[in-house]
Amino acid sequence: MPLTSATITRLEKAAVDNGFDQETERGPEWLGFSSTQAPLQIWLTALEEGLFIAAFSQQNVVRALSALGEVFSGALPAGASGARCVVDIPALHHLVRRAFQLSKTLPDELLHTFVKKTATLPRTTEAERLVVQRVGQVIFRGGLIEYGEGTCAITGLALPELLRASHIKPWADCERDAERLDVFNGLLLAPHLDAAFDRGFMTVADEGTVMVSTALGVNDRRILGLAEPLRVRSLADGHRDYLSWHRARVFR
Image (cartoon, rainbow, N blue to C red; front, side):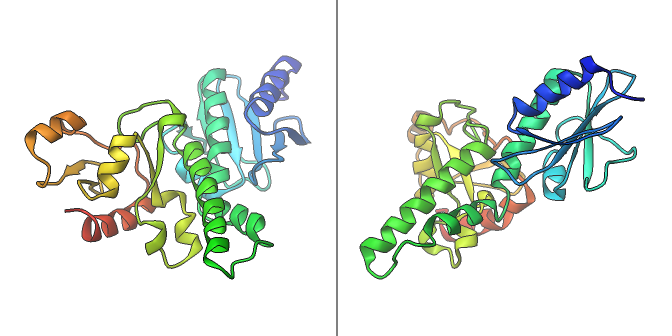
């Protein structure tokens, strides 16, 4: 069924407000959009039942959106790898925004940004290499804030200014820039949790449970907010190899 002018306006707003600032396609059933800030293409449509559909060009983004909406199994526009279905416009805005965030941060995207920004920087001296490292750390932090939606992965603290981009496998221990800039090699944490994680006083199990070292006494656990059971709110498969490394090499 062709989209009405009112529906087209709502779909356009959902795209533009959430980072997809270029219209690429206008058909009777789907509107296509791309972004000047992210590599993802999306297509939006609406069904008679009041449902809204977003289709995406990247399969890794589709997989990462599994917690939002439902799988849409109908016909997709050419170039789409998968689609999700949501029940209202606010949910569509959230879905599109999350897709935008993921497409900027999922494996290789941060690395591509790093390569572009450091291509002309010298790396001969230690001071020059530190400059390159700082550029990478800024990119990593920005990507982790996008991926984590600006909230602590454990507490939910939503003040990005206070949060730390904590590498699971430290920068110095990574063998390749692809590991250093992998968003799955990080957790966005409140400062006290970042310090405890970095020094091995806590780690995270594969299912997300926070494990606290016996090196921390009862009173210290209470002061740090680690006396009660905690868990990481959302883990992807990509986190697990890094967490295994942390448990084996850093956790006390």
